[in-house]
Amino acid sequence: MILSPVPSLSVPPAVLVHGIDGLRAALAAAASLGRPLTVVSFPGAAGSAGASWFHALVRAGSAEHPEVPLTAVLDCGEQPGHALAALRVGVGHLLLADSVPAWPRVQAIAEAAGATLYGSAGPVFDPRFFRDPIRECREWLAVNP
Image (cartoon, rainbow, N blue to C red; front, top):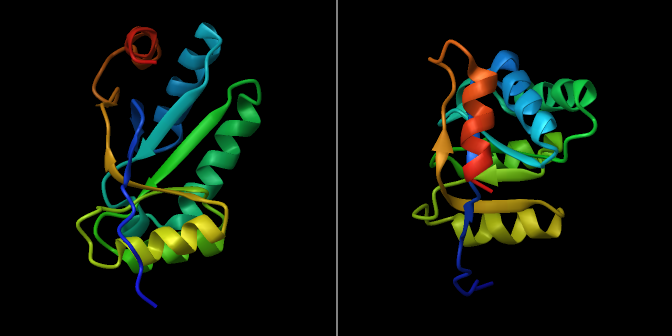
């Protein structure tokens, strides 16, 4: 089967999360603004922390802030196998470098599974080193729809 090239999507403006504290800060900021939120895991998280970790992290954060529509994107780096494993766990939004030769095939599998595969990241904000990450996230989210 030959797959025709599918243009890749870019992750919309997102907050970078390294763990539950960063996710909580981003969710609290989005809740205070009454807006949806997109977060992306740290680079290559699918291979180091794993898809199950990310899936559990997102479920925990969503349980704390069910009022915030959350799109959580797991970064799979350049590893299509990590993206496929994430699909099996139930992760619905994945970032896989669109330069990976298997990208069209993974995209077709993701689409068949009802998931979204992104080929590149858009603007990303990392609140990790700020004293008040909620305030910084709120300020960044206010100008990055």
